[in-house]
Length: 587
Picture (tube, rainbow, N blue to C red):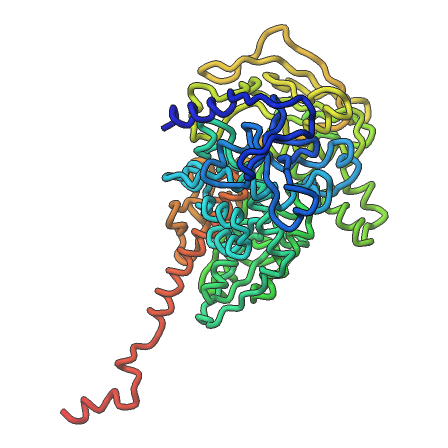
């Protein structure tokens, strides 16, 4: 099958049809097709597939679209993955977006934004394959019905598309923006060509649904009378709350921060996910009956045992918030911070500035600025990139990103076959911004930090690294490879090791070997009856889409427990009648 697809694609790419040299002179082909000049790709100067209309009066019908073979024909889906190029919607230009905190994605009407026609062309590339790996374990953790809603977008059935999307994903406006799209890595079209632009299509569906008023409060018709307390309002907690509320239970969510959203609010910067987008969904959940209590740090200013006593079930969606540290000489110096500390304080300042509530002392006492500083971000991944992008918007003097591992290959390695996530070299938004401003990629590979160097006032002023090589036993330093790097701000972005343990200790919960809460996947029950756990606090640090998957699983397990508990606590109808004792009188 793979050979067949490859042969077909090769045939189309190698086809050459003679045409006049003039740019806008086209040959007729049975009045349903026109031919473009030789050697030109299907994408035009505006970054979209070129279109053709039959005469100056033909503006009511859908135009013909240029294909890979150079012809202009009506859009069709049967061979769309062969006829059209993958064309993901680009971010705004680096030099434009680095000047503000607006989202990377272009708004509707922006010259970079895709048109409805281009989205249809991209949806046409979905093969509707027999085994859609994009929605399996290797692709989408929530098993999104990707081929179905791709086909609905192609047929301009946007209302049905959002219905199918919401069947499996509570918050597609979040995943469509921040998810790295493992579904695209396992797309079958990617075997022989480029994968479908699934992520772009996902957020276009939900954005249009919000715009068209297709998303509105769903008030449960009946209530069960059972109550649930959820600790944590990140993606796992919100997904669990949404599901349990729709099941008819009364749900209360406790959040220790001053705003609802967890890492969606404070861990992911504004340019990747506008906070109005988070608030919009949270406000919808409120209208549907979910209660949110902020500044409630369960285990500290809220007694977790009181929650157990006052609610029928307790779900822990705490996240994995204990960062991995770097215990080297000089770690105590001022100017060395964890990534979440840096990102959270920046986001709080941004929100307070926007709302006009920024306190005069916040800048000096709490804010961490990269303005005019040599910034070094230790650790890659999405969080490291977010720290780079944030530093760029602070107008840093320079930014360098250290990664312990060697540079990934440009293509899949033999030990990284499809449909696994492709571990290949890529340029994320932060890297592109550094390249545009400073003229070079910020990443330095195969280095390990040896020590931090401070000035007389206890501030970090430099750090020393050693080159490393990866062996079977792990990283091995190379003698004599020490280098000193100027650094006024160092951000540690090396991942997270476990959830914080004060709730775990208070409840005496069992933990696994990584100090995550012990609960079996698919069951989600902890070692304490009536207490469930899901998300990063159970699974370990992972993606937002995995958190949503876990939250939905926690909801299913909690619902099963609550229904059984209600049944067990209900009086036996056989003994609840006014005539229940008449049998003994008649004896």
